[in-house]
Image (cartoon, rainbow, N blue to C red; front, side, top):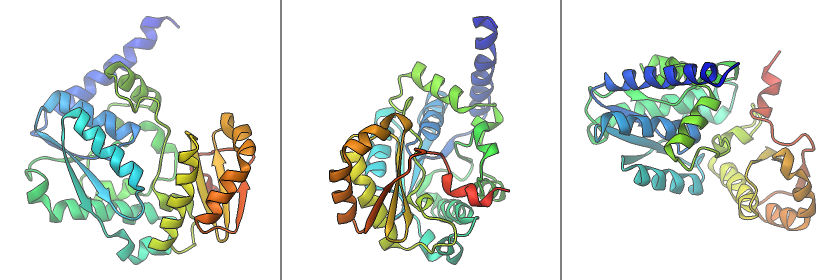
Length: 276
């Protein structure tokens, strides 16, 4: 396949995206500071100018480091940024942590945006979120909440894959181009294990240890008193070498036992029990 053949589909996707966005009166972007939502926010800013606002849901499931990064990214993009306190932990369906937990999280966000619309942006501005083609093959109950609330997914509609998002981001000079994926802290808890604020804080403190030691791709999966560490395959050896300080820090966060998963990081590894 020639370079021209590879380039054309991507260029058509970008064109399709910009046409979509250009037809909007403005946009409210659900903005986590991740690769996809940052790219979407950038594209909206380039197309709509000041008729865009990034909205970040702040709750115990969002680490302070990620909130700080989202705030910094919005500032770098020159986009107005609104942080909304969300109360998903008040929802029984979320606390119970069944297979549809993400539905309750997204539902809470979209309801909160609707309730506080006057301080977010004009009612005519649709809410957008960064779903992409890759998400279609994963367990994503949050997509159902988006459909119910009429939230649009322009990247998905334009056919963007993760590779496309990273390619656009590199071309635009976005520092998130090579950022690793990062889901909310509740994704570290096996389905069926109830979630509360204290549990999420323990996970955040444990992951802060890995972050402080410079790991790029990591998760601390919660299994009662056991913290199961997943790191990128290229970082496994380093995790072994740093086992003493890692164990000390993670135990100080509230875990009794610390285990290193030799399979390394796998996206959505706790969803494996939901798959046939």
